[in-house]
Image (cartoon, rainbow, N blue to C red; front, side):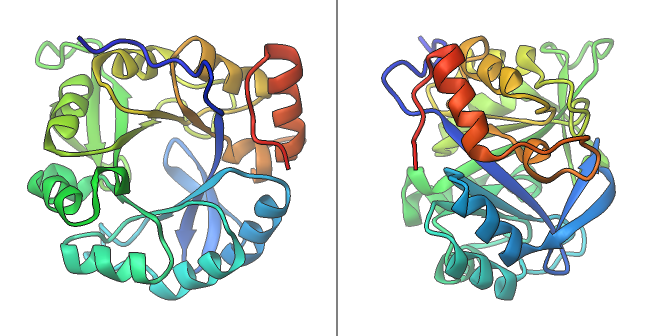
Length: 271
């Protein structure tokens, strides 16, 4: 029976998530009002030098515009960093997966297209291995919807389109289809700096036997620690802490890791 994933004995991972528009990193709040941060390759070089464990690259307009991901920017980022790079947005086929992997990605993130065509998860897993496929989910609290028993609904297309899918049921379905990891993006918490939605992160971690990434709401090292120790996440996206224009003070990766290790006793990769 699936149970809560713990991080005991495993290195906790801190991830920078790049929401890309025209080759530049942006930061949004609840998936809206994106503010420019800087050139993607330059931001990547900065967080890499500071010790980030992974980078997730979302071409946030590709799916809505029905086009391929920005391969040129993917190449520039991949040439700059030497940590795992996951790419999402505009992944509509195995051909698209081959293209982004050839551009330097190590993993594929499937979100809106997976909802529209769930078999793409199975096709990608069969072609490249389960470890290569990340099921990314945009989830929003809908406590009064009887058809959504978990109280969290899956949205697509940059959180603009409701799907009627229950988040926990969709996570379980993704595991059955061949996903190797699940990223839980909280629409409600995104860009708020008020902490992750631990409830849905924990519920999904308990429901599947896959690593779960907490995303949306990081505002302190304490929030990241809670994602690991209270919600059972294997990784946490900490982009707002690193470079959000809305934060009074950004925090270097090394400082976050030092606090996770010293204050909470969590295992981290030191540089």
